[in-house]
Length: 262
Image (tube, rainbow, N blue to C red; front, side, top):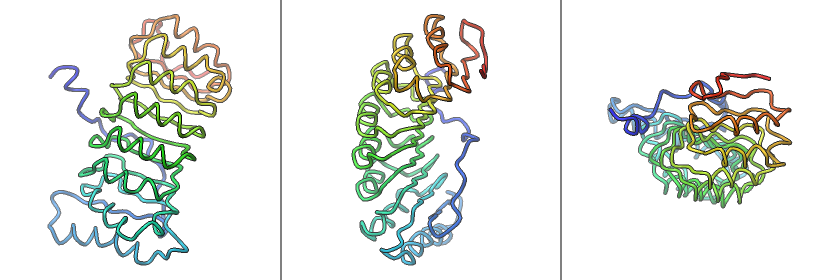
């Protein structure tokens, strides 16, 4: 298998999953392709029942469809209840969700008030979903796009321009991004955690990020695994980030520094 082909295959789920919500605020519809049709219907019915029990005065804050094999169907059932139910949605978790399209995410975005979005490993969604979220949710603070091979510079430009409060961004494995995305990221002013694993930025791109006043003032965690294109010039610039508590270098870089925690 070629390197490019292998890169398109999603790795195992990230171990850093967010804690699961435990109240009615969580709508969870995990299922399996091997489940009998009745069981799939029962699990999707759970989503509808949760929405029925949620009044317009107490909308649910978390929609968790991580790992669901029928995430799109579940979202369609949620949105059929109207804006009043979705308007209080703060957290959207679609990590490794299947049968999910840009249109499903875009249907939720305008009515919600999203602050935390996890699209890690959701490889069937791309720019349209990210742009819809960004434009409708300027208060977004955390977004995970781990191993999302469809996202391009256009989505990152809109994300950075529309969501100035972003504090945590995971772009690990977003191999289509170029230095144009690095320049967009450099305009942010509150980022605390940035994962650029396998991003194809050059020295110029990384330098634009780490020398940005906003990044330099707030960044505390930076991941640069598997980024062999960087040279010593870029890594010397990273050295100006004196307040960063955790810097994870690529094990393949030519500087020879691995997992440096200042």
